[in-house]
Length: 401
Picture (cartoon, rainbow, N blue to C red):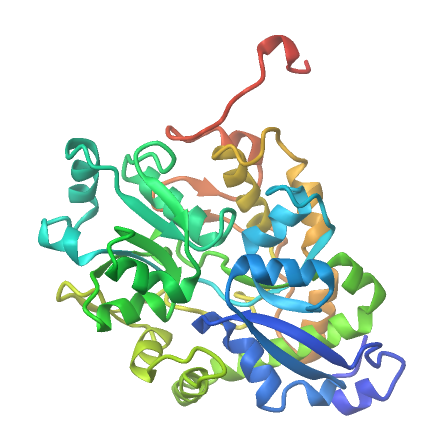
């Protein structure tokens, strides 16, 4: 077990094999652990230098991860699993989730045009979709990404089929507001600060948060290829330690959160006003309809390690939704795939060295907005348990007995 003293650790046999790393990130508030780790002195004690590279789209980030241009990245959970399972036509690549970067903190917004029509609640939206004869267009950020899955799950929970009743399109996060303003989309699901920023610019309102769909849901991860983990294991562990230490620092005080928001607002990172970043990072919400609240399940970057542990059940959930919506035509071995991708042993090694609690179970239990309980015990049955889905089952004669 490496020493908790980083200098003693890096001088020993566990020194990183690759001390300079290229890290990709998107201009989103939940990239904070990487930015703080790279710029505030959290990487150097572990023998690392982190070169941050902002990406303009998740597709571009994916391609650079696969080519090796990026060593690791701030990633969508569903992006990593799509690559592992070969969804999207790029073939299969063995991937790795080193740790979770955050829970919660995404938003579903609707346009000002819908607001003027009185579509300001989930019930009003359901009536409008089924009675108006107009097919609305909603944007998400990547076909297998978290935002697509939150949008689909939320719409379905309101009786709206996300693949039949509305159009779904892909728009990079920072471009959402421009598309909304131009009338090309009627709503979107995106990470902060772009949900809050839309309200600041008078472009619609926040109808739901992702934490209202699943309190303390998994969101972004520190992702890489399995090749990186297998060829640079000390480097991978050092990277987790640096990012985990940064995550812990951010949540040690409100002042640390505020200074992080100030850092993120810079042109090199989010290039967005502090007023769009800080309130929701502090859990202070308003929806553009006059409602204000302190969200008990706002963006969590550490939460005493609970936001960082790469639970097997978190990875499995995204695979059940891929199956539910027809992105997977057959059931994978859910648990086996999750065990391959989630780097639990490496994470626990790093967390233990830092004194971060990590002895919890590999699976966790959660209750979602529709009352469904997810605990990873029956992923096959869970994927088939929903009234709205796109499952196409093989003929009975072809099903193995």
